[in-house]
Image 1: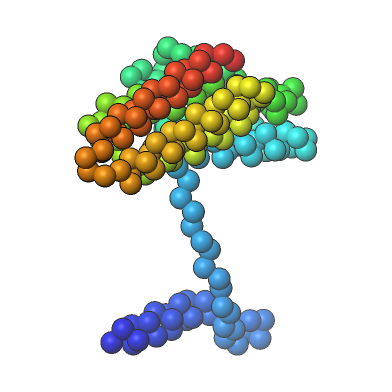
Image 2: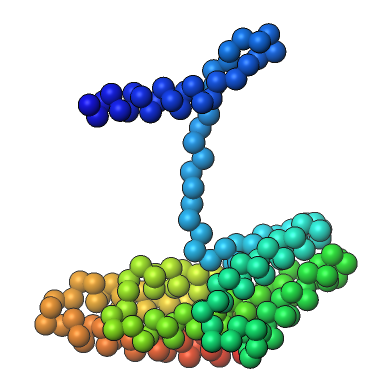
Length: 211
């Protein structure tokens, strides 16, 4: 039964790929299935692509990617207490101001990265705050947050980059230790993870208040 179902699905996929050639004959082609990759923080991706476009002089493309990234960033900030005001509101306005600058050819990749990183870090600071209040810190969402945060920290330089990467790795190790902790040690492992996360939150806060 299972084999029949697989064959049926294959035939349906094959027939869906049939088309007419120039002679009007049926031309069957096998079309590869495009792999879908989930993106948890799309604004980061768009901003990186915009910076790459600026480096090769594609200012209009950079402006479009910046605009799309800003829209994604606003969606990611929806859980902030007041996303239109306060630190994030100002950081977001600075990001949107870059769009016209990119169109005019007056924006550099470095300025784009510095400006967008501030807004990104403010969102991540809030995500960490929300993670801390959970009765038990969830593993998979925290892994995503740490991966996204690492991208921004790598834009820093010198000792601050090194410190940030070490703190992210320390949090990952604490998360892994909690996962494998014996039942009798689980509470202590959870507390150690929260301590690491609290230290990381203060680091993020420091760098999200400097443009």
